[in-house]
Length: 251
Image (cartoon, rainbow, N blue to C red; front, side, top):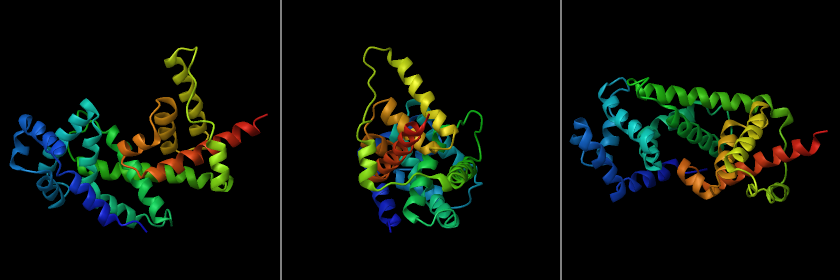
C-alpha cells in the first residue's frame, strides 16, 4: 500500500525550493495578506489550522487560483495539492466503500481534484473556496465512479501483455497532409463519443486528449497532473484497449 505520509513529505519538501519561493514572492508583491508568510510551509500551516469557513483562507486561495488561471503553471497545482492534502486524505478514508483498491482510489481522488482546480473561477465564486473545492471533488469523483459502476458488467479486461500489444500502435496521430487543428477536432470528437457512451471515463478522456491529440508524453502529462507515471500509463493502455475493442467489433 502506498505511503501517503511519505508522498506528502516529498511534496512539502519540493515546495521549499527556490522556484516555489519565487512564486510566493510574486503573489506577495500584489497581495498584502500573503506578506505575513515567509515560506509555503507557513502558508500550509495556516490553511490547515482553524475552520474551513475562516474568510482569511479565501485571501490565500483567491490569489493562487487567479495566478493559476492566468499562466496555468503546474507548480500552482502542486501548491494547492499540498494545501488540500488533509482534505483529500479524508475523502480517501470516507469513500473507501467506493473502491476497495486503496491505491487506485487515491489516484482517482487526486486526478479528480486536479481537474476541479482547473474549473474554479474566483470571479464567479470568490469566497468559501475551501468548501467548494472539497465538495466539487467529492461530487465529480462520485460521477466518475458512477460511470464505472454502470459499465462494470461490460468492462473489457485483458492481460498486461494483451494491453501492451493493443496499445503499441497508437503512440501518436499522423496529421501529415491535413490541417492540424481540424485533425485535432476530429480526434477530440471521436474520443468524446467514447466518453459519452461510458466506454471511457472523463479522466481517461483528458489523458488521451493530452497525450494523443496534443502530443504530450505520458510522463510529462503525469508530472503536470500530479499522477504516478505507471498509473497514468496503465490508465491510457486500458482506455485505448477498450476503444480498440469497440472499433474492431463495430459492423
